[in-house]
Image (cartoon, rainbow, N blue to C red; front, side, top):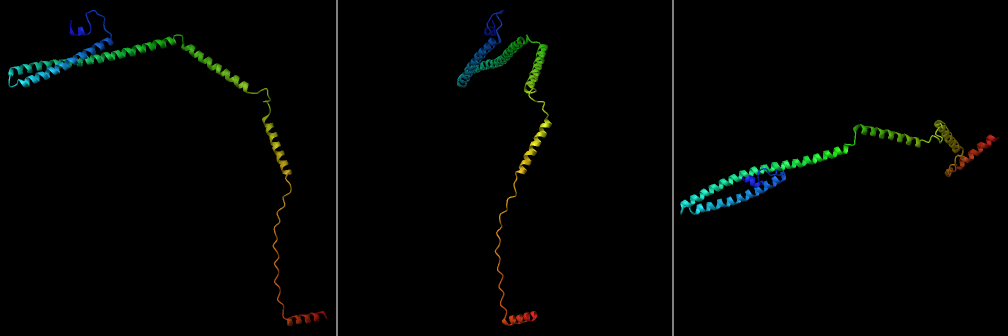
Length: 220
């Protein structure tokens, strides 16, 4: 049985593993190869130490150590390539696994949506919406009819009411003018006291005598 056959389990004709199982197997293989890498790296270090110690003392032993180091390095290189291949394969499987899960979820959602719509018909939905709109119009008309007090004197002439209101306002204005009394008396303004005229200075006695004589002569 091949190496990969041992890893993935088995004989020809066995059940094909799921993507999850394959991913798990690849991870286990990666862990095993990385442990192998650590082992080979340690062996390489050991062979280098042996070659250094026997370089001058035992040339043959030193060369054999370097040969083993070369084989280990070659194996290490092969493991590096294998790890790269396994890593790419694992990433591809993980992507496929994710896509499968997404597709299954979308499929389930599509089936649920189909099941929800299986009892619905587009024409029936349009008819139902038309019925709803029609009933809303009827309800609106009923509300308008109820809120319009037709039977409670709504037929009164608006212009007549306005004229009556103007007459009442004019009557109130006339009454206000009639109730207005005489103009209030203005407050008395205080009069200024008369200023006494300056007393005339007495004329000379000679002038008084002359005037008296002139008066007596005119009287005669």
